[in-house]
Length: 509
Image (cartoon, rainbow, N blue to C red):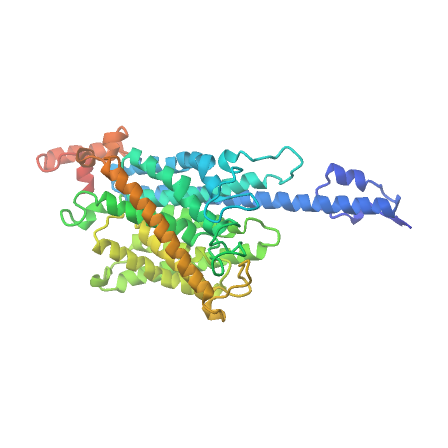
């Protein structure tokens, strides 16, 4: 009934908390009875659980920081893709996506997205616990080791990404008032509702809800929830606000080229880097999910690499009538194809086999290319190809799960739902189709009402005078590159003072 016990049996990496020290402090060579051993074992188990919880909190915090860094990627990509006259404007909006959008998510968005009650609504959250984090409690008996707080932060980073997608589509002609209005609507209501449908345990499309429609939609990291939502808002916004002056017909294509290829590439790489928090981080924990997080990192890499390689070849060798640029190795198209590959794999990053990510990225490049060509044929001006990258490829990402989801990796609460290529009965594919239809109708209808109302009220589009002068000069105290602007203005005065009236016009020409 008495056994020897020393600290030597304890794992050397275990954090020696005060409870564990008290329960297991026998000292070298000191014997212990069964009751003291039991107390020590219970303390040891509690300490291990605490260490696991704290590790999960840190893991999600780290992944959230990577996703937050994507805001810098969006900012650089946007600044590189617009003309010199609008750089300050698009950068300011990128900053405010994170700041103003963060306040909106805190006050109402998070509450509409997630419902902590036991009998929550299937359509939208509303228990009140998450509005302004009014139910947050880390001081009483509840020990979540900071997880609830970091979960809010992680979800905020996703919401900011959804809002940023839209800003690129209406770049160079949207007012700051109009921008604030659509950020409030998207982050505060439109996007959180979709989150609730698909990711909350009560959502009618949620794979975590055993009573969900059909099998429940499998969208692991947000091809539909985040990217389709942002992409559809981008489409309706770009359509309603109308093209930039001279975009189709009056001025040559190169007059609207992005002002910095370097910023475009840096932005693309930062976004790709952040995606390693976006996709693997969506496991929401490390313990028991390390295998899934690691697989997500690999599938994310291969889909992006395949899409970029496919995109550059497609643009180079496709005929001009099909949107190609024969003889040109197009950098911008390659970067956007890469991003399209990332969007395409986001829904199924943990539920498909590694080889399938190559196929998904390959097809994703065609979805991006086709959607980009369609936007130009429809004469819808989308400076960053936001709809083609996020909307079209987000759609494909959701549908791809219906084909490639394996039975082993599936996580639907009603039982493993497999893709049709793995013996599935087609029910998962049907769910993915129905889910994308719901997202399209909801986001399309609300964003159309929002942008149409702002446009009718004169709050969405800048005036012709402001557009002629450039947003930076008109609204932000001068050009982003003042030395270059001054040099161009001096040159234009010497060469063609009557035909070109401003430095920004000359830079664009």
